[in-house]
Length: 118
Image (tube, rainbow, N blue to C red; front, side):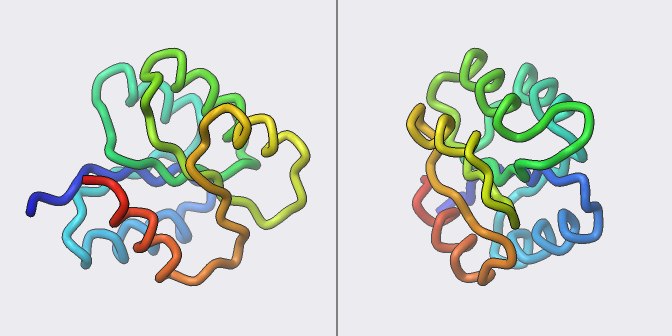
């Protein structure tokens, strides 16, 4: 079975690369974006099976990015990630975000979510 394309969006480059390495080791094609604006621009060019997006980022936060991406690609599957209690996350979850991963999270939780996309 062909693995889906995955995008990791996080301003913590070390974390983003670690998550990308984990997914790549499990057969996924992975790209990394460092902020929400960059993620939106990439969605203009390409579809991703699933995107894991940090909530707190410079330039454009994950929730605002989620809504911009959903305008471009209404069926985009986006999982939000945060280490904080973020009231704005509920707005995204109510409007189609796949899930919320609370940092730190178990790598298996990410892989399980990635497996739901074919």
